[in-house]
Length: 128
Image (cartoon, rainbow, N blue to C red; front, side, top):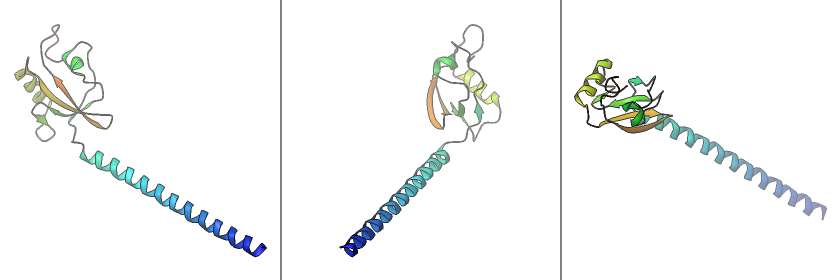
């Protein structure tokens, strides 16, 4: 009986070791997959060319949903490939007064699209 008990306990112990080893492997695989997914998302985000430092309440920028720390990747026809200076954005804004522009930003690691309509407001220019 003692021999049977020892043999049975040895089988239980081996089974527990195998179970824990499989769980450890599964956990490592899950972590590796999550890391790979995060890296691929980060690599798939377009290159930002400007960062929003301030948004005046009530301005067209504020109304559109732009937020401080948004990283601009596309502002109308301007993107990282053709951006040279903020004058590029000013030109797009001047030519788009009263017409909606597509603006794409990176916010909290995610790509977000907002619609912005440049217009004059309270004597502060077209965006504010």
